[in-house]
Length: 120
Image (tube, rainbow, N blue to C red; front, side, top):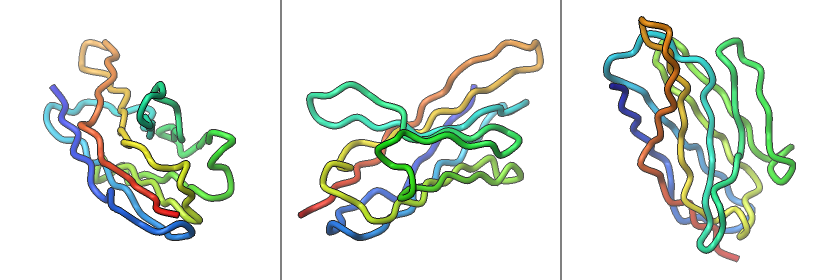
């Protein structure tokens, strides 16, 4: 079992910045892709950004140029640097980790979510 702990969510004014962190712990064998998703009230959860174990990243069009995802493999941690925040970025942000266990079985783990609120 793998546990994810997220932090960094907060209330911030439009144009401001936040940095989210997500650390995996527990029975970790091999972490592949790590990513951030978000869910605004009344909307479906959507992809924000992902990063492979080799460091290749992808972004939703809505955050390109403003957000940056990174990871520290030694710490089993993924980060999301969010700049130039807009009110439409308001959502609960979830971390997701693609994990492979010793038997070669893949499983996705999700964090509990951290609230990001951007005021206008």
